[in-house]
Image (tube, rainbow, N blue to C red; front, side, top):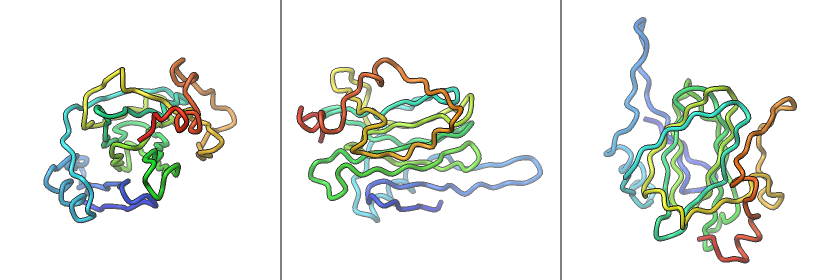
Length: 191
């Protein structure tokens, strides 16, 4: 497995080894020992995963930017098993030197990359193809009372979403009513 570091120390991309032959391909999609070793080598906290989630989105579906507050903050290990998506994590840890910065990567069913997003980050993605399927492991259970959302197109965050001219965005009412980064900071609903 190859580990790719990003401009934000805590966000890592895991690139598994894929073995191919005339029959198809094989890969190890998760290995607890290797995952823990990669985090430990970088001085990062090792999480305990408690739940796996799967979602399917049509092209133009934009989900996020979601996060959960303590005591139910969630870390996520995300990947796309079919289709293509632009995945984004925003550092919302107020004591972090990268507070307010973001990292975006393309996840596809073909590149098999996994994106580690620890607690303290808001997370979102846009599906770039129909029938894009996400699979993600979480470090805590869903807790509605702790759930928050930042507006996806906040000018202060200036996320460079790859939105095609003919793409029709599809957002839930919850995401359309999300707060701005500045509002969340003022309301003290960040980390």
